[in-house]
Structures are given as structure tokens and as C-alpha cells.
Length: 299
Ligand SMILES: O=C(O)CCC(=O)C(=O)O
Image (cartoon, rainbow, N blue to C red):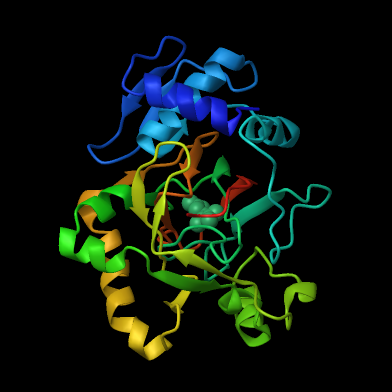
């Protein structure tokens, strides 16, 4: 496992240096890089360190033609931290740390069909997720990613100052509230567990602008799926500025788009990236496994 402190120092020293164990090909000028020349079943410590460095530098990294069993998927994820068990979704049978992110031909809704960061209602939202494609449609089902550090940096200094020190409440109420959960369950294959319904909402206050624990870079940390309102303000009072931030955060110039193939992997840094799964492949099947790595309390 990569130790956060050790990697932090190492990464600060070596970001920008060449990679010797992997071939790193950026996919846009904004974020995202494809990593070639590696079999994730065979990656040694040095290779993992370089993958981690590419991850910190490009925020989302992609691999092709990987052959991962469920256990090797989890083993790879464990090299970056402990594994998250999703509090609401029913996991893959026998594997509480794995979600089956699947859309069947007759499903109406997909998973992640709006811009979001994962699980931001937790006190310690995930550091990242690793999504592995088992079956993809011939066309459609791409995923978009948006660089939240760049989104923050492109705000005016006056707006950055206005946001600094503000916090917002993030809640899972849209997932766990019974009516909402039942609506989702009726049209989607990934189900919200009965036991998660009618529980008091899981909610946490987080800074609007968070500092990346390993690179020190600041990024916007709000998302339409889970952010509810600014601290000590009503939802109505919060809405105009939040809506501005949601739209600003995903401008096309902050994004890249990934075209999946069978056995591709995307690994995103949930601390500084939002993502959006396109639902444009009606009548086709798309089947992925997701493993998520725990993160830190945002500051
Ligand atoms: O299926 C995808 O491309 C992404 C799914 C998603 O949004 C998620 O796993 O959080």
C-alpha cells in the first residue's frame, strides 16, 4: 500500500519527472492520461508508485486490456488504501467492497448519470474509485470527468476569496429517503438496500474549497448530487451560488471523455474530480465493477 505521507513527499519532489516503468499518454490538455505498458496483476512497488504519481498528476488515469478477477481488482485497489463499503447500495454477492455498476437493456436509468463526486456525504469521502469494464455497448456509455482544481483556479480572485472559509452540507437524502430509493430501484439494476431506507440522513459539512492532502492543490468541492446548502444558510439562499458553481465546475474546457472498451479501467481522484456517466445506449447492456478506496476528512 502506498503510504500517504511518504508518497506526499516523494510526489512533491518527483511530479513532472519522467516515468520509467509505465508509458503515460495524456488524453486532453485538462486532465486524464492513458497508462500503457503495464499488467496490473504483475505491478511491483516501483510501478505502483509511478501509477500513483500519474494519478496525482492527471487526476484520472485509464488502462486498457486488463484481465482482473474480482479479487485482483480488490488487491490492486488495496495498494492505494483501505476499501470502502458503500452504505446504501447492495454490493456484489460475496464481495461487500464491490459494486456492480450495471445497466441492463430494459433499465431506464444508469448509475452516475449526473455530475457528481462519490459519497461526499461521508465525513471522509473516498480518495478514489477504480471502475473495470466487463461488458460495454458497441457505442455510447462514455464517462466524462471534470478537473475541479482547474475549475477553482479559473475563478476570479474575488470569487476565490468569497468561497474561502465557507462550508456546505452534503447529504445522502436523495439516495436513502424511501420514496426516492424506491423510484431509483424501479428503474435501475444497482439497488439501494432496504436496510438503508428510512435511516436518518448521513450528512457532513465540508469546505467548499478543499486542499488536496497529497499535492497541496486547492479544488472546488461541491456537487449537484449531494451538496445541499451552505453552512448556516437555507437551501433557497444557497441555491444561486451553488448553481453557479455546479455549472462552472463542469465547463467543457475542464473535462475529458473516456470511450470504454471491454477490460478498460478508469481510476479517478474523487478529491479533485467530478464524473458523469452518459446514458445514451438504450436497449444495450453495460456492466462494470467498481471498487472504491477510502479517503481523508477534507480540509
Ligand atoms: O459507469 C460509469 O461510467 C460511472 C459510474 C459512476 O458514476 C460511479 O460509479 O460513481
